[in-house]
Image 1 (cartoon, helix red, strand yellow):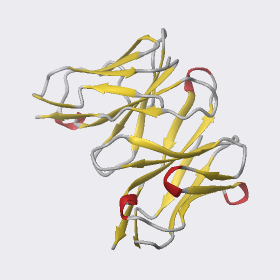
Image 2 (image 1 turned 45 degrees about the vertical axis):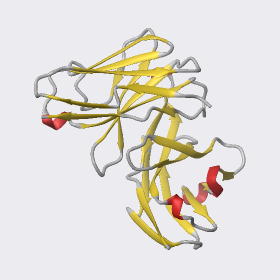
Image 3 (image 1 turned 30 degrees about the vertical axis):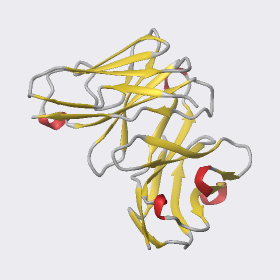
Image 4 (image 1 turned 90 degrees about the vertical axis):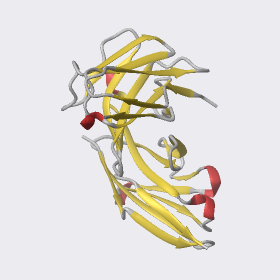
Length: 116
Length: 117
């Protein structure tokens, strides 16, 4: 089946650090990738939609200058959390889809970000 | 706009008993509906999906769900619970928003299923 890989799986860093998270579709071309955030004991909330070769579309309330998304190829999207603070600590999950209607999104295992 | 409501943040059943996890949705256009399962410290795994074909959808691990348009529901069931079913379950809805918003998911709050011996 379709595989989506996230790297790193766990990050602990100091406040003010910028952190880059990679999301790769290993065996298919992902025209669209989505970035979600899941705080403890809460559901997933969509942060942004990333289409290959174009600017990401951010959900309301998500700061595009803080969460930089790049989708340079059909198999790779990156999320950079700039100047991370403790309130940014969360599980960040990417998904990838081939883009056909009704196609399920394939989930990465998530990147757990802890800001000290 | 689309939304999902999962009734009951926690459901507890005995091993061998019926599992019923409730999901109601709101959508201005015909929806695509999904159930996902999340085991501790893992990502989400697709259980099943409804994409406007058969209203009764069968998924993995013996789960199934029935799309009822009149009730705007997509409840998840399993006839006999197993200890390995203990996890958190998320219902999600997707609609064709067109353009760059193709297929984005809106999730319910999740239901934690506990299975007792």
